[in-house]
Image 1 (cartoon, rainbow, N blue to C red):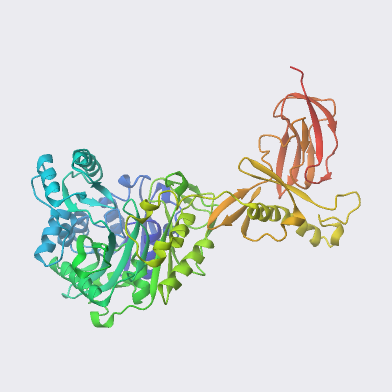
Image 2: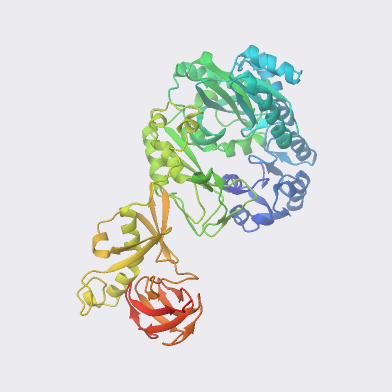
Length: 630
C-alpha cells in the first residue's frame, strides 16, 4: 500500500484526496504556487512544497517540479487530481520512470483516448455506438465542408484534442461553415496546440449521459452506473445528478455495458468516465445514445456517484494503484437513492458570468445540510489565476425530489461575501419547470436567455429586514443596560418622537423607515462592518447607513444629518469657521465603527448643535454649512 502521497493539484480536489488518504493512514504532500502559499490544501497536508510562481504554466503544469517535490519528500505515489497534468501521458510516464506510483490509468490508455477522432475509431471497432460524423485525415476546408453537407446540417465541429467545451462550434447552414471552422481551429490551436477537427451530427434534443467505469491491473472492469450532466452553460456542466432521470433498466444495461467495452478496449486501470450524447427527442433509448469521449481521470462530479453507490472512488484509486483488485465486483454494486451536485462558482451571472475574485470575508457553506467539497475557508481569497470554483454542493435523497429539495435548501443557506457567486442562478435552475420534470437537454440554459440570471430589485421586505439588522445593536444595547423602555429606541422617552426612524441605503437609493413597521419582516440577514446583508432566493443585497465614507450625509441646504443613532466622538470645527469641500467636520461612532462626516461644499459652519460625547438619533441635525457665495 502507498505510504506517502503527493497530490499534484490544488483547491477542492487536493483537499478531497487528502481526506481519504488521511482516513487510510497515508501521509500527504501538497504542492503550491505563490498564490496558494496559505491555501486550505496546503494547511491540511502533512508536508507542502513550493513549486513556483502563481501562473499554472510556471508551477502546476511543470511536471519536473512535481516529480522533484515527490522525491524530496519521499512520496511514493502521485495523484494528479483533475485538470492540469491529470491526462498527460508523458507526465504519467515520467512519474513511473522516476520510480513513483502513478495513481491513474496507464499512459497508453490516456493516449488512446486523448484524441477524439482516434478514440471514435477505436470505439467503433469495439462495438460501442458512436455519433454519425467524419474523422478523416483530410483536413482541408473543402473536404470538411463537403462531409458536413453529407452528414446534414446542423453539424458540430470539434477539436480532436479538445475538452472542457473548447474547440467546439455548432453550424446551422452551409454559408456559416467556413467561418466557424476557422474560429474553431484558432481556439483549438491556442488551447491544445492542435488545430485538427472532426465533424459530428448535431443532436437536436441532446442529453449528456456519462458512465463511471473502473478497472484494475487484474483484468477486472466494472461500471458504477450513470450520471446525467445535461444542464450545461456553454458546454460547462452546472448541475449533475445520478442516476439519470427517465433511464429505464434496459437502456441503463445497454449504455453501461457499452462503457465497460470501451474501457476494456484500452486495457483501462483506475477511474474513468465514458461520455455519451443521447438523442432524447423520444426519451432515453439504447439505440439513440452515442459515444462522445473518455475522460481518463476522476471527474469533478464524482461525488454523486459515490453518494448513490456508497463507494469512495479515491480509496479505490489508491488501492488499485497499489496493485489491489477492485474492492467490489459488478454484482456487488447497486443504486441506492438519488444525488445532485451544484458547482458554486465565484462569478457574476448578471455580468455575463465574469469571474469574481477577492477576499472571502464571509463564507458560510451549508455542510449541516449537504456534502460540501471545497478548497477555501472564510478569510481566504479567490485567486484570478485558477478556476473560480468555490465549492461543490452535493445533496442525497431517497428520491430525485428529495435530493432536489435538499440542494435548494442548501443554496438558500449559502452565504458568500463580497465575492459574487452563481448561487441565485443555480437556485433558478433548480426552480425551472423543465429541470424539475427531468427532461433537461444541454440547450436548456441557452433557451432560457436571461430568465435564469435576472435579479428582481430588493423589495419592501428586504428593506425592512435590513433596517432591523442595522438597528438591532442599539436596541440590544439598551436592553443589556437594563434600562428597560428608557434605554430602547422605541418611544416611551420624554422629548422624543413616539416612532423611531432609521435611514437605510441600498445602491443609489435611500429610504427612511419606521422601525415599528419593520418588526414583521422576515428573511436571512447577516451583519458586516458598516452594513447589513439580506438574502432573497440565494441573492445577497447590501444595505448600509447612508454612504458618507469620504463624503457627507447632508441635506441640500447644507444641513449635516446623523445617518443613524450614534455617539459623537470628535468635533473638528466651531461655529463661524470656514471649511473646504470634503473637510472633516465631526466623527460619529455607530455600528462599532467610526464614520467621518464631511462638508458637502466650501462654506462656513453657521450652526453646530452637538459636542463631543453627544448621543444623537437618526436624522438629527448635527451642523449646518452655508456655502461660500459664487
